[in-house]
Length: 402
Image (cartoon, rainbow, N blue to C red; front, side, top):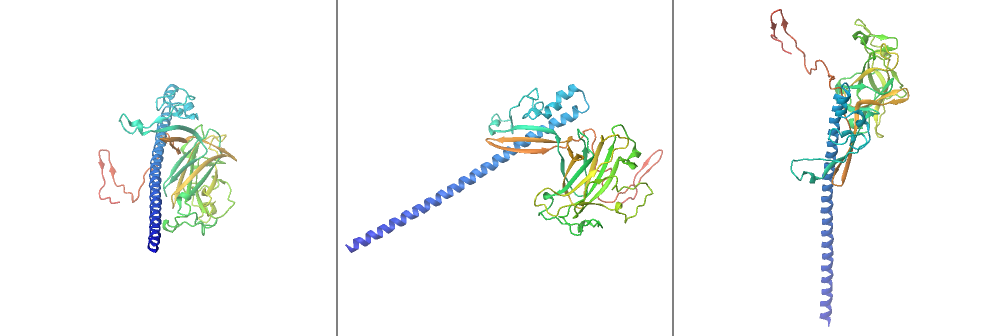
């Protein structure tokens, strides 16, 4: 009886061990299958998300073609040409895809909804089985701001165009995207002094020194000489160097009062005069709450010969030392004035199967007949010009070595 009892106990222990290991293997197997399923689902979701994003980008590209047609045919050409291309009524509607009705060959009125547009990636008959489409695209020509980013020492020309009057421009620059941390270096940047360093001595987390140039004319005409003169409170041009500082309470800056240009060809201003140094601008030392580090409100002069704030104007921004993201807004006193037809906002929603992605893009709607040159001559080295012209021939360079 003793041997039988021991064998029974040994068998029970073996059975328990087998059951335990079976449960352990089952748990490991189920966990492994769950991980595989989760990874596969995540991979599928990532593919669908990218496909939906690509579909939304396809809607943006169709919107660009629509805006180009509008710019080419609706600004200076006949009403019939404009209507054929897609007139302003189509562009301004909030109805999904109605703005693109002419571009995609569907719809006849601004209120007519256009169904989603399938994205075809190949010429195969089953291309539509990929099930990608953009479902809703709208275009807004009236935007609250103009945004962009500029490399150091390069320029961005911003047309100041609004459907309402404005008398000042607010420039904000240097965002979280321009630095690797939230901390902004403003050490030693007081209102006085404004030291100008070599590029290597300007820290990478310090806001750019922003050059802001205004060029404007009245609606009734102008002369070339008017860009170099100031007539009372009126002027057709101004240049300012906006220097980042840690000081607070710096208010609106009249551009004519801080104009850094020489007043005449023989002008030799005192280098110690406050008006011959960069203009102090208040900047914050942390970007933990987002936004931009520096903000400057520039009060625009009236254009020479103008009786109101109607103008044709451009603002040229050049960040020095560091590249920067920026934002420009128009104001009429305390009221925001929207940009009109300068940088339209395109809202596009794309779909891949049952997953959707929505994006907003800005499109610079420059005048296709008036390109904005960066410079007449742009050099990285020395400039060498050595030639001669006579009544009968042109003599090329001889020994010129830039």
